[in-house]
Image (cartoon, rainbow, N blue to C red; front, top):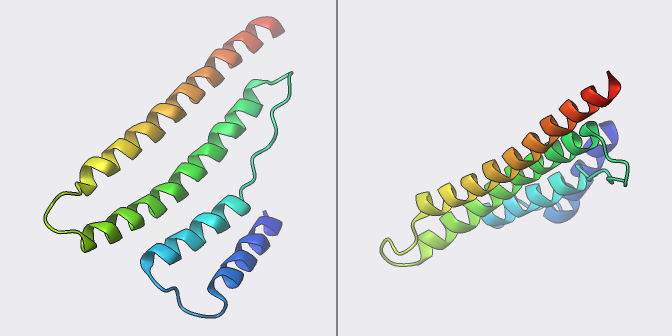
Length: 123
């Protein structure tokens, strides 16, 4: 974990180059890249077990959280620059939230199924 924190700090410093972020979008992008670099996905091999898949779900949850912040910054910035209410931020946020919740639910359900199968085989 300490190594990941060093990577995240180094990326933040490189991307900011000692300057304050140019915009909220730039700051969110820096955080997204730092989060992704500090949270590499572990490989899943042919003999996958529930712990491997659970780890993948944890990884994906962190990725979705980082992408959601970046997505919100991009949408908010765009909404400020276009007239009227043609960009429904709440609708887009709900779509993203639904996608991430559904994707994680599918993986977590598969983890539970695998655990039941592993427990059945172990007994």
